[in-house]
Image (tube, rainbow, N blue to C red; front, side):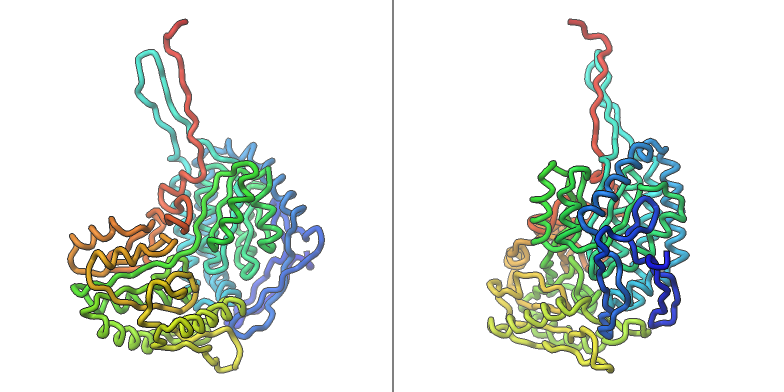
Length: 498
């Protein structure tokens, strides 16, 4: 076990035992080839530890464990499955500080944000625990000679691939409904942020889940992720990540026509009409793009402002950044923005800053790396471009950083057309005190989510997902259960004779 666990002390003084292996069949094991992934603290660029990386053979072992467990897990009464999920939710709450510490260390997000993520995991697991014995079919009226009814059945073995921006949050979104419905799971952590979900695996075992029901792997997307997507023993893929990767997963999953749920990229618009509460619009607009270092799939990164208040908004938005975007040590109280998750992501954001300059947009704020007290870390100053046109890359492409583009419009019709003018359709926001207009615009925007007079305040009881190239299917709420069950139709002949 000593080679499968390391005792660590985080920068905030929290000491804990960090698993480093693959969690298969409720046991910690090394990878077949012994390859390891090194994870880096993005705040100071120092190595935290290394973990074993799965390859195709390890994925196969996990799938076999999940397939064996499914035979009995699917027959466990829903109430009992719910009890186990509830126990897991309680354990998550009890270990909140440790889990939040790990995500802050491994991901770079402020500790307050990481704590909120763990609170959401607790709520999601508790929510789906309540659903576990309320998943049922229906009797369908046909004729007196037929009894017809449906049965909601689990899909089988579910492959789940989670992203690095919300390591625990996205795991909770996927594990909750899958387990409530009676499926078993092979989950792959993001190679950039593997640590918190490995710690969480021990809580799964402590909660009492049978061996093989939940299997958690580390691994690179090109090896372990590809093996999961293409494995013939996996019945469903749930993926959160980039649109480009989602396309490849769809291709690989087609080998056995897997059921798929994809939550992918976005370039979400936020529309500010001149009749809104301007102070609130400015505060929410800042939150909508700068939250989590801008590393949010629904980030409202395209801010469209009515021309009559455009100049006023831009100046006030920059003042909001100055006062609210406190950059620094993510463990320090008051920090709003930590580092980008990796050097690669840091360099990606900087490259888009150069693209904005070269395309002729006006750099109105930021646009540089941020120098930390230590001179280390992947910190970037909040960046704002104005005078942005629709043909610019910074208007069309997802940057995934603290990077906003602001543009003006004259009419409601123009605002809607410009909001819909990308290949994405995940989130959107509308600010106006005219609720008739708000509802009208909400109907006309091509997005899976519309916030009216807020942004990014999703709720675990409400469906989440996109349209166009922002994904397929829905997570959260009752809709999240539909992604993890099949409806079987049963026809009973009550008297028809041939």
